[in-house]
Length: 190
Image 1: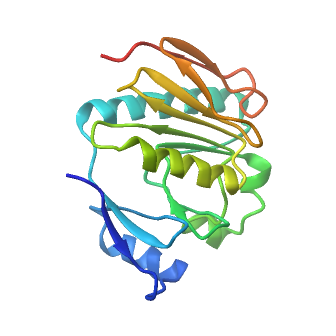
Image 2: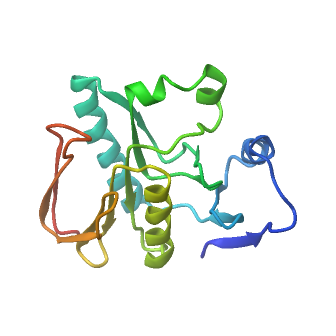
């Protein structure tokens, strides 16, 4: 199943309406890109789900020790400053940035861009839309992002005001100054 894209150009949907739409359709993975298109994405398979859970777990373990922020799963949708409503596979927000939000903002879809994200390309994902999504994060304040592409055995590393760096697998990735002392050892994917 491919991603279904609905044009909402002249319809308009508020943040509250989108939140309600997601609540009454919990079985769908919904996002809105910066062009205002509603995207209905297919569920991922077991292998991609396992890889995603591994990534979340490793980041959570690091953060449980460091206590520098909040780790989020792919079920969390963030309202970005450009109007997009995006759900990265793994996200991290520095504690001081999270605490600037009110409790109602934290309870719904937080109006903030994560400081760090991981997008993991599954077999059903096309690469170009994921790259566009990473650029949306950068435009919205992302400090570091990894687009892991098992199909090409590479990782695209996104940083503000820098060209995208490509690292081939196997690789050890650094959380740099965003995730101090966090490293991710990525194998070659079968």
